[in-house]
Length: 234
Length: 234
DNA sequence: CCAGAAAACCGCAATCACTGCAAAAATGCT
DNA sequence: AGCATTTTTGCAGTGATTGCGGTTTTCTGG
Image (cartoon, rainbow over the protein chains, first blue to last red):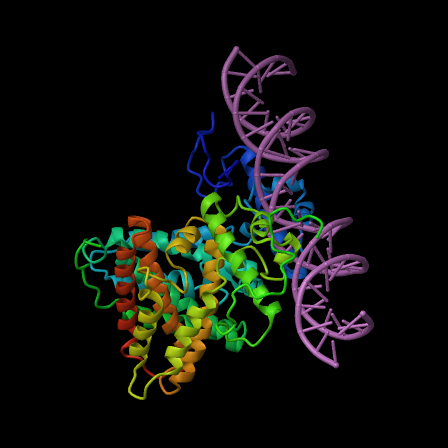
């Protein structure tokens, strides 16, 4: 936010034709390509070093050395050390948002929520996935308090976005607060179930997946009789 | 005491500052009392300065100066800056745990969960309360990303404790995963509803309280038909 | 191919959270 | 008072993060 951000370009690039490039790997200028390359290198190196030596024991300087940039430059790619771990969580959120916005006329709140859960929580190739936190990453996060905190904040912000989208997609059934409660219950139940599964059985993909499904079921049960908000009085 | 310029009572004679010694339940002497006093001073000064100047803009040294201790000593009271804000959240958790462990033979999971919510979320004198985060604190946390993260982590740990207790209190109805899902749905729904209420209407105690109640209702609805955990097929 | 503009990169210095260590001070006990 | 224990503290160091200013690379237009 304070300096250059890696997400959206703050201005229109002078002469860059924004042709049909879905992955940003084709068509663009060399400048952009190189930046994306360095970004990938940073994420990969960081995640690997975090796993090998631990999060706290790995310094930003070490990650930068692996990626071939100066430590100072790191902060023009990420706002901090934590962001390295949650760099591509946004994609997972967009997936959920697309599911919400693409509701059919016959879809119910409960149905869409279940679909979100299938898409983003329980249907990862590795076995489980919580907003982009798959296998390796999950273990890393679970063993690092600082990352736990960051993950929870990220999930919270994702929830807010999902709730807004859900309220917009079901204007008859939900207001903002109702949507917040619905999404919160869904995500909370899934995370709560997963947490206990991890706590008791370790990082077992099968158990985690089953636990998440149970969480989904429990939360969706509360959504099946969603009624319009009583009044907008507060 | 070489650098002491804030008028700290360093050379206080061993006389009682309170006068009467019957108030404190601890049989300890002056040493313990002084430590608790300093702890309180730190929390109070910190919270006030955070509110006045902002969390990030307030240094630990400033807080310590107000409390009359050396900066180094701060870390023998709290493990870090964040802990100052969540120092007395544990009490609220213990309240919830006592509710769970004191279940009556006729109480249902849904009923106990509703009771937890009443006790810990919505029944604060200030109007609302989320695991010890009342009024002032809530605003502070909501406006500080670092504190948001810390709060979420604290809530997560509290959830885990509550889930364990709930599973132990309802061994017939819930296993660990089911309890995790139940507590997660409850807390998640309440927080999600509160989040949206804050996002749309600001820090309005009445609206927040109403939103929390709606969150409780939604989550509890999913708990009313709690069945024993049927093992997952996969 | 060249000049100028824009963007990115880098080094330097500074602030601040946090930690380990050993001396100094306060306190408790006899 | 004299000794043991606990607490406080100063010092020095690591590492994250930021502001500033200079240098290099890439882009754009001629």
